[in-house]
Amino acid sequence: MKRLFLFVITIMAMWQTATAKFSSVSPSGHTLYYEVFGTHVRVTSSGEDGYWSTPPIGDLIIPDSVTNNGTTYDVKGIGYRAFFYCNGLTSISIPLTVTYIEAFAFYECTSLTTIYFTGSIEQWCNIGRDNGGHGNGYFYVPYRLYIGNVEIEHLVIPNGISQIKKLSFNKCISLLSATIPESITSIGGGAFSGCTNLTTVNFNPNNLMEGGFGSCSSLATLNIGDNVKNIPNDAFRNCSMLTSIIIPDSVTHIGDYAFKNCNHCTNITLGKNLQYIGQGSFDQCDQVQIVTSKSEIPPTLYGSSSIAGNMLYIPCGSSSAYSLTAYWTIFFPDRFEEKLMYSLIATSSDASMGYVQIVTQPSCVNLEAEIVATPYQNYRFDHWSDGNTNNPRYIVMLQDTLIQAIFVEDSDTGIDDINPNVCTVYSQGKKIIIETDKSDEITIYNVCGKKIDSGRKKTFRVPSTGTYLVKIGNHPARKIVVLG
Image (cartoon, rainbow, N blue to C red):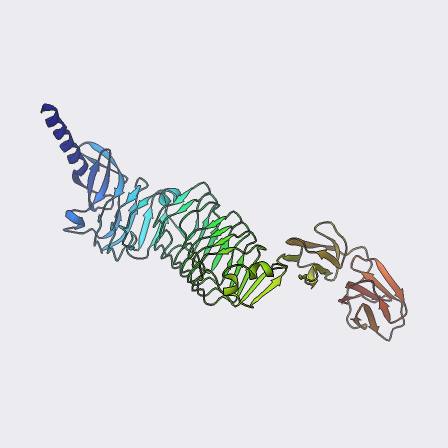
């Protein structure tokens, strides 16, 4: 019996410790109330069930620690209904010691539009938040967020952080862009919901299993990185301003309803390693015109609302595979076409020296592409970025190709600036034709300054398409592009 009595006394003491409430004046001059839990406290309301006899108003600062009866406690929580209906609060400063915010803590705080957090982005992402399952978030109205006195507009989550807990940036209207690194494995529910000014997301987590950016109504630019393997369920649902969705080759799985109701999207590109498209992944994307699937093996479509569009482009030689695969023929009956999926990007190393044209685009019938580098006056083509010096250049497309034309100053050829008043020069097939009253010697050079032909004739046949220089006597030269 004595042991039982001592046990009851101990339990009562623990209960009294856990529920003890005291008040203290905050640095902003507000009287705040706290409940003790061992060595820490949480902020609570003055009365029971979250009600205040005199609610705090204005700009409120919560301290990182408080002292009561000679004992100092860290402030680690903001409790259930702590500021319930405190609609006179305009801003609140939350200390870095806070690790959780409970349900309805700021419910009906209709004037609370600015939040200050004294810790780091990582600490903010790790605060446990509970909205009680009622979908109202934990801040009642849209707000501007400051972390370390810096307004968060272009959020870059540091690589190494593994999670962004639910509601972390819910209703944050100061957020304009967000960069999610490869280390993130979890984005909690509603973490970015209601970020109505968020327009750009750089998304590159390699093992994200849940969460995303649902209902970001202004999101117009989505850059999915090459580390991404899985796009979770509902990840970009209701992002209605997206006009183009590009799934990189690294992605193998798109979750259920991942892009549902992205109803401004007109183009969807699916990577070559995609294996699975979940139920309703692109449901209600009613404006889609073109879907490009780069995979030779048709991805599995789960359900009849997985994807739709007016035209489907598929890799060369894959028509039979798509025709025999469930749902693909339902979505695109007689509306698909084979297309070479390799991209060719040909650019100038210096746009002020010259430009590059893709004269012949490769296709399923002819894999060969033709590119021509054309220098501006006082410059000449020297070589391509892979060391090749052919110009025009013919490339058999067997993979995505990026190539640059390298131009240099033209100091050795002896060819002067162009003078358009000397003559008329034009091409016809692989012939260069000169119309002039001059009887001077005419010399044809390629863009590297090498002599091709010369004489007093008015028609010259050249060996291939490309750019040539026509020199008439001592007069300035004329550039001409021969396209064949």
